[in-house]
Image 1 (cartoon, helix red, strand yellow):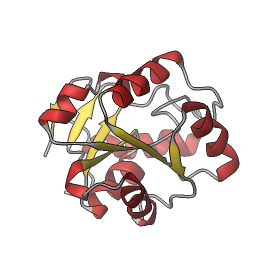
Image 2: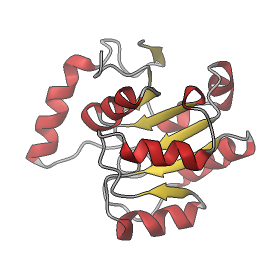
Image 3: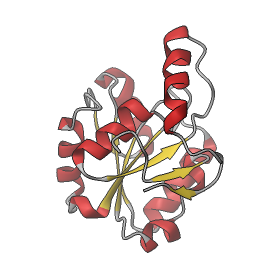
Image 4: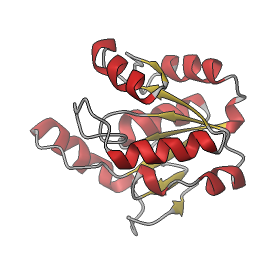
Length: 167
């Protein structure tokens, strides 16, 4: 099912190098807003920085793919020392294709991490890579986002807030 994530975690920091090694995942494509930081926040939180450092130390390759424009993504990615694809057009697969090429990995060894079913999970599934859904860092307040989150609920595991293999 295109809207079902492969794996579900409470937050990005719960994804461990051990879990990734067990699943033969050597690279992660990372969403930005509400996955690594709160929506439109230019500063990465300490917990995200520490998690990224753990991933890098474990040899996991990382790249950001965001639908945001370069002026939003560039300073954030630069601060973290990460490559990125801006204007990724998720759920279309162009951004994922570019990211996988830059990681230099086969797509069977890549997974994408994000907080939205209709962009991150759908895009990953359309590209044929595993998707790791994480719950948003904080609830968005705008009506369009609240509507989108309500539409996502049927596609989330019933016993949420747990590490779970869906696929």
